[in-house]
Image (cartoon, rainbow, N blue to C red; front, top):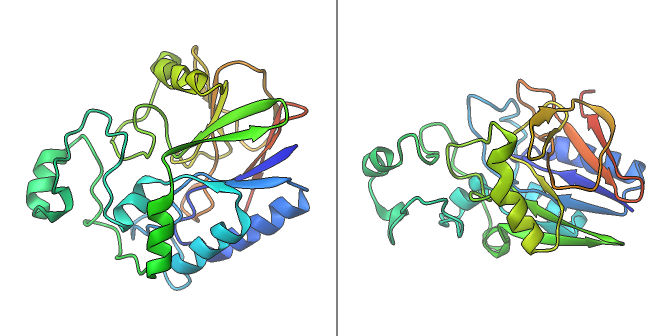
Length: 250
């Protein structure tokens, strides 16, 4: 079975449509969304005239069998993450003044008002985003995989943190194993190609075809959104234990 992954769409409806066509042409049996469907930050994204949050959400709903929520999705509906990674949001986080939240969150969690354009969403889209979980399990023939936007303990990607060494993933793999998942797939990192981490190291595999082994591994897919980095899609061939990353550059 082939599973296609889209992630970090950030309202780039044109690239999302192209990615979905590409994954269908690759004969993917199912398509999974790894979060950050919405959210547009001025310094990073290059398609301000064509961005469309509602259309991107509709495409995900119509084409993806499962999806998880990302940090920008949470911000769009002003929802506090379930997995807080030790940060105390309190009961009225979004009701507090920005300056107060900026002081409390400095070097700990992301804020968005300083560079993110307001997200225009229908009530239907807001309901869909609120319904998404931070982690989920995809059951495939003979194997189950964990999906999330980021890794334990920050499955939504809301904190200013990125694991640098393999041993930083120990608790992530323990969480996966508690859900009978050895492999896990995430977004958030916007790698050129894909990242893969085990208990020994985290490396960038780049675009192409890569064989993987059945052991605890964390795989980070490239973004859909157009930024200064090369973007793309990820395909997991569960039968042959292969990863394939394809650039969306046209």
